[in-house]
Image 1 (cartoon, each protein chain N blue to C red):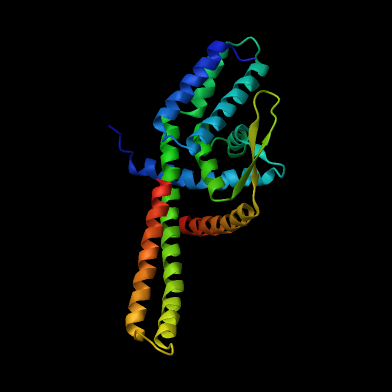
Image 2 (cartoon, one colour):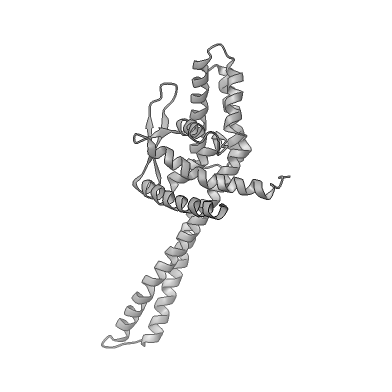
Length: 149
Length: 117
């Protein structure tokens, strides 16, 4: 059974970590993991030495877990690597979109310029379709960026 | 102000960081039914004899990243000692990445040994 004073010390520690991390679902996830880790380590050691002071054991556990700054630094590094991979994924998506848009625009331009009574020539139609495809791509990227911010 | 690390210190930090991700995958792979974060930290200490000098709390951002990369999955189980806890399990993709990294690491160590001898 964890004493209220020890619980408060655990929450204080987690609060310090939380202050250094961005407010997000991911932070909640890491805090939940840390809380569970601290509780298990603490109870594990108390089983080995039932007479020991909970706060003394807790300070040993927290020493092994590391300073909140160390956790935040690792979290920051992990986020940075994720962001870099997100960036390369975004570039791949843009390239794929272009690869798909260009042949579709060519086919559409050929189709409208070969109607029985064409009102537009092939090259003008192609430029119009490509401009629409580019605009659609920009708007979609902007929407995705806004929803992820 | 943040103190700049000496070259060899920052080099060690980078090497440890990369190896730690591999070691975490290796430990989770040993537990078909999954393993919780505290268990990973304990095994890491025991199996590597503290070689990676990891602060246990820094494991969690790494576990989070491995999950995001879909190399690990999470399920929840009841704990005897307290609230529900997360159990980490290797995914099929995690297993593939682990095996590929193992081959790469063996090859790197082999070549480095030849270089040093």
